[in-house]
Structure formats: structure tokens, C-alpha cells
Image 1 (tube, helix red, strand yellow):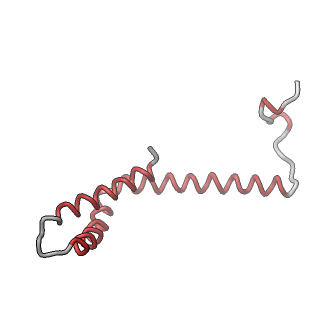
Image 2 (cartoon, helix red, strand yellow):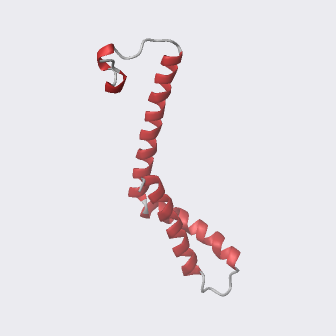
Length: 96
């Protein structure tokens, strides 16, 4: 499971948990309980889910770097710059 998906599911789970804790309070409407759960979940997630937040942030940073490199390679190819040397070509593109 990707770190971003895991973090998202943990955030939703924490929101659901806080909402279920607030559910038995009779003085509040369901809408107010949901909004209160959202507000309470924000700081809780900041502290409780720190490890998973950092993992997802690093995974997103790696994906951005990988896409940036691919974009630069594509731009170079479209600009007509030379590709990799002949000896570095993939095996399936070599002629035997």
C-alpha cells in the first residue's frame, strides 16, 4: 500500500473515531458533531500520524523528482539533443 493512501486512510479512520466518540452527546446535532470532529482531528493527526505524514511526504517528493527528470528527458528528446550513447541502449532496441 502506498504511503499516501495509508496516511489518507489513517486520517479518515481518526476522523471516524473522533466522530463516534462525540456521537453519544445529546446536546449537539449531527452536523455540529461532524464539524467538531473535523476540528479536533486536525491537531490530533498532526501529532499522532507524524510518521505516516513524513513517509507520504517523502514518497510524493520522490515522485515529483522522478517526473521532473522524465520531463527533462522528454524535452531534450523533443529538442533533438542526442540520446544515450550507442553502448547504453536497451537490449531490445539493439540490432544483432
